[in-house]
Length: 225
Image (cartoon, rainbow, N blue to C red):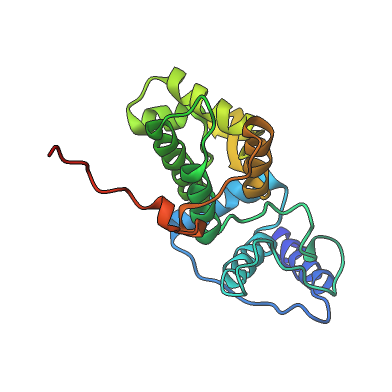
């Protein structure tokens, strides 16, 4: 049997074994650059390209499904045709906005207003880099922003200690080398509120949730008579 025929038979067998009752063979057409990136990502994650493309499609569809932030699981089929629970959770735009609103409303003793603004900027930058399929690191963010690495480390470490970020070592981060990638934790909103309660004794109350009472209004300036 010719090599090409054997390879074709193996591929056809894999498709037949992977497709379950609730799974459909859908073809995709990608730009050459996108295809190269998806192959690299599939190798790093230990996935087959068709399965990984299916996860991306389902993750995109989930964004329209009441703001759910997980990869929906598909029943039927065996092995890698299942959407595994280990798939990385997707942090949606609305989640990032909620986190930034909590950061700006927080009053940690060691933070200033400018610190909170920098924290929000970092969270948005990490979310946008992750959504673009890149792997944000402290050194990478420093290069992107033209900043020394040390302030980025201080900022990220503070957010990590409060439970908003986590660092996960991954392969192929820079020039084929492994590195610690910054990720927003799925429970970041609850974590920062818990940290705020522990340090200040009160939960975070966002500006748009604060009730306005007559005592909140500034009094008229006094004039000399």
